[in-house]
Length: 155
Image (cartoon, rainbow, N blue to C red; front, top):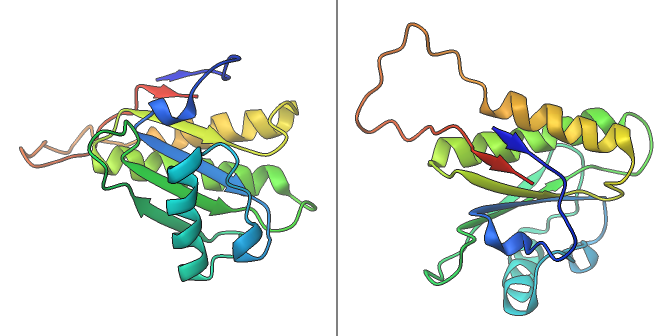
């Protein structure tokens, strides 16, 4: 698996799965900044309809029906308030995003987290991503319909 920080000009909507980690807020003010125009509006409606407030351990999974888009699924994970053991919450959220992508057979994931420049937060996201891809399969025979796929790229 290739884990890297995004460069300037990177389009997060070029990944198959987009994970957005957000702080606790009211549904209409949840930060969906990495999304653009109609994708942001589409996801905002889902967040409001589900009453998602970004509490720690909660998430909203949004399937993107547009075949022309690279993004097939948007996963918005709540981190709760910006205090306490935030690294653990980030690790758990990144794990959930990558695990879901792997179980659905997707190979590229973009994770957006608040204040990503802080080393402990970025490290926690990377650790969660690696753990999300792990699957002990030494004694498991693969079936033809097994869609679990190792994620190749996490940005």
